[in-house]
Length: 134
Image (cartoon, rainbow, N blue to C red; front, side, top):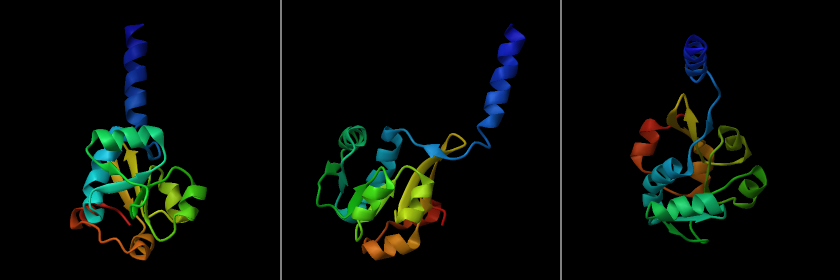
């Protein structure tokens, strides 16, 4: 029985290195958003209750008029044109989001949509460009 558990743990551990990118925990995403939010005066707009709580816990002001917005679906992204939209799924970049914060192989990863970032008019911190992938 112990051997079966050990083999299962090894298989699951090796699978995590090739599984597609997934959503980051809200607390981790909020810490990354805090860095991005320096470009918008430390404010973020967010409708999602779980993310809103994580943002507030990280010391970020949640303000509906912020140029930086957390979105959870493509319909919401399309309604937020002209603002810098941050999402938790890489595939939402094609819907117009500017930044995707995902988990890849157990680590946070940042994907950037430069056209959407430029269109938002928000000047991003250089640190995000250094670690983000286009």
